[in-house]
Image (cartoon, rainbow, N blue to C red):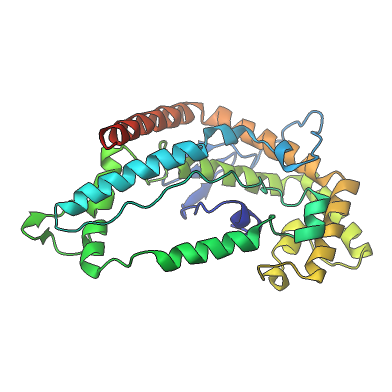
Amino acid sequence: MRRMALLASSVAVASMAVTVAACGVTDASTGVEASTGVGQSEPELGALPRIGSYDDVVFPLDSYHLSPEQKVTLARADDIQVRDCMRRYGFDFDLPDRAVEPELENRVIGLIDKDSAASFGYKPAGFAEHSSRVREAKSEQTKWSPEMMGVLNGEGPSKVNGVEVPEGGCDAEARQHLARNTDGKPGDENFVIRLEKMSGEATEADSRLKKAFAKWSDCMAEAGFNYRDPWQANGDPAFAEEKASAREVATATADVKCRSKHDVNGIWVAVRTAYQNRLIEANAEALRQHESAVAEQLRKAADVLAANR
């Protein structure tokens, strides 16, 4: 996953085997048969959307993700289930303080706002502060002993203090109690993330976006910046520091201007939207199963929280 997406989300996408067919993609680990445009005509776009801010970047698959509040509900319930399981083996710990984090800017297509680019380069506003908070939180985390980790993940002794350790440890037991899975199938958020990844791959192979990227690249070269596409500019290793350099700011500012000149963002959103609509249609039943599974997980999580007030 490119650095642009990493700045916008902390979710890690599991590596999944993909078989390319004549007219689509089949994901062997999820059973998803997704029509992505491989071997098909490119989908019609209709009128291009006007992208004036990050709030305008909305895609059809967005609605299948958990809200920040729902993520915290599941995390808190999971914490309680893990704690209760660990207590059976003589281990205890304080529950982490889970707080609802605000949604980050949707930077799936990268830069949009010229003022943000002029101030922070390719980084979201407050990125340095966020990084500092993450480091501080990690430094304050209590280190678990090898024995505790063995019970947590099930990779230690099969019995601890005379009590059988469940297969996969307390972590797996907590997921089972909440009907959660991490196998990439409906009910796992990676199922939706995988569809999004497919839509992104199809989008970047689309001739219309390729032409827009070529125009953007020529525009950037005229301004003195040589990059093949916006991803390469955003991921420039020279911009890896937490605070944007003058060079990064200048590059990002030119980037936004070239996007605007050739309506790169409008084309990008329109193409990605079209492929996501195609994926949703091809996976309608699986997505219905996903919504049902998530609803069940949230119901069980609410019950756990209610019982532990």
